[in-house]
Length: 200
Image (cartoon, rainbow, N blue to C red):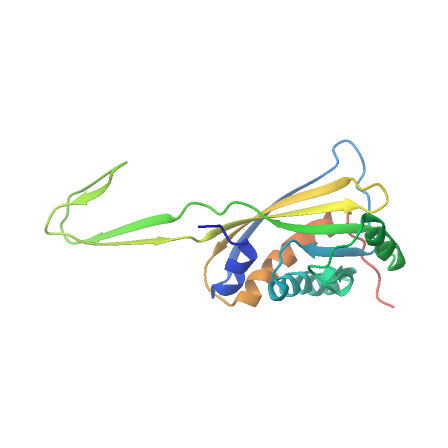
């Protein structure tokens, strides 16, 4: 079965997440800082795209930075030329694009719990226990990998990249995306990639 975009799973499963992000800018050079960034979630599902991008807008506002949602500049599904894209970005003073992309989800994790006086053995073929044990096994797909990439508008070069691993625990779908956005935005600011504007 064709694997659906991971943002779908994030929104449709009631949960919260443990978030771990690793990021890196261009080696051997000072980070290039951007004042206005547009965020583009690469999914054809409009509802998911809007929610993901809006989460980044809110996370940026919380730290005094400016991120513009891609769906506010471009109609999803409409074919546009490179020149039109560049013209639109420049007309809105956008100096970088933050792309959100999905990665492979982790293999399902299987947990086995055993009660009573049991003798259990585990091998590549599975777990075997004697008749006096009570065993329950659950298999869940809890883990997701998402990629964030910053591309400079002027040079069309990748200048920053990050990988985020999310593990579902317990909370709402909005909290799940909010955690992802907050973690990435904080790294962008800490790394000097996303400018923070002092309050006026």
